[in-house]
Each structure stands twice: as C-alpha cells, then as structure tokens.
Image (cartoon, rainbow over all chains, first blue to last red; front, side, top):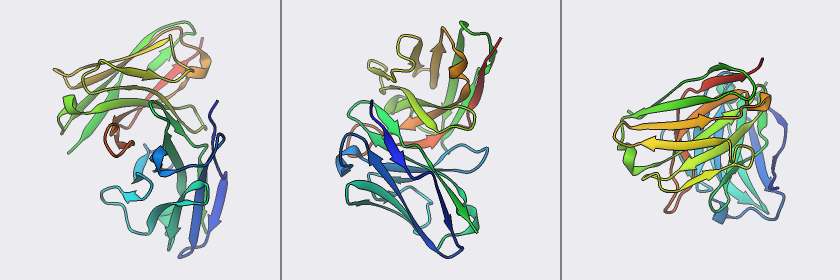
Length: 109
Length: 121
C-alpha cells in the first residue's frame, strides 16, 4: 500500500517562511509523480495551489512555490500571512490512480 | 466561470445505496476527465474514483472498488457516483473535481463545494 507522508503540523510567524514536504513510502518523489498541492481552510473546499511540481495555479500568490527537495516534493510559503492558516495536502499521480498525502496543518501566529 | 455543483448526499443506512451527481458548467465537460474525492469527518482527503473524458475508462481506489461506480452523461454535463453496500466508513463529504490528467500535467484544477454522505442506522 502506497503511503504519502507529510509533517502533521507547523507553526510560522507572520512574514516568516515555512517548507512542507511530501514523501513516498516506496521511494523518492520525482517530477514523474507530477506533485500538486492544495490548501483547505476550515469548512471549505480545497483550493489548488501548485501543479506539476512547481507551476502555480491561476490567481495563486507568488509567495507559494513548489519544488523537489532531496527525495521529497516541497511547498514553501515565503512571507506567511494570517489567511495562509489552513490544512495543506500534496497529491501524487501514480500512473493511473492518485494518492493524497496525510496533510499538514499550518498555524500562523 | 467553471462551476461544479454536487447533489444527492444525505443519510443512508449501512448496506444501502445512494447516487451522487455533479452538475458542471462554464467549460466543455466532454473534454475533461473528472474525479471524486472524499473527506471523512476530521480526516484528510482521499481520491476514490476517476473517469476519462469519453467515459470509457474508469479508475477506483481499493476502498470502493466493486461497491462504487463512476459514470458521466456528457450530453447533460453531469458526473455521477453510484454508491452501494455503504459502510459507516464511507461517511464523508464527497467532492467533485475536474481532473487534468493526460498530457504534461496530472492534478485537479477545480473543486465543487461537496455533498455530505452519512451512513448510519
């Protein structure tokens, strides 16, 4: 069974930088998994942030960026703002199916 | 403007059936794959099923395979999820998404607001 793991939680100060990662139980995450990232505020539907590792979805501020760091996909928030306080999920494409990561909760305080 | 509007959720007894619908507008529905994603209360997102643009290929997560059937009616711009043999663990908000698979990107670019399915006696 494929497991995609994210850090459970982060705390970041306003204006600070935080990097979330997305790891795969079966090996390194590469661009071939087309990692994407989604933000979900409480009680809301998810919002697409990043696709194909590092492409920003329409309307997403440039303080959100995606990359591969080592053997994981990564989402970096640079200059965190109060409304960035949300849950964040990565998604990997597994050749026909998709697998979501376990999710990371980001608190801005 | 792309819109996805789910309907059909509600309370159903264990072992029962339910059909969810997702009405799409603002884009050429027949040109895109579509996917259902669910989220159990207090839990993370779970991919459960996808269907290609013409509906001839479908994909399912192991957790729903053999119990759920995804389908679409391109003439009505509507996506469906027929759920049967429902279990308590199927209780979740079900989201309809537009799936950008095939090509150089694989992700979900638009999401509906979701419909809640509760399986309980």
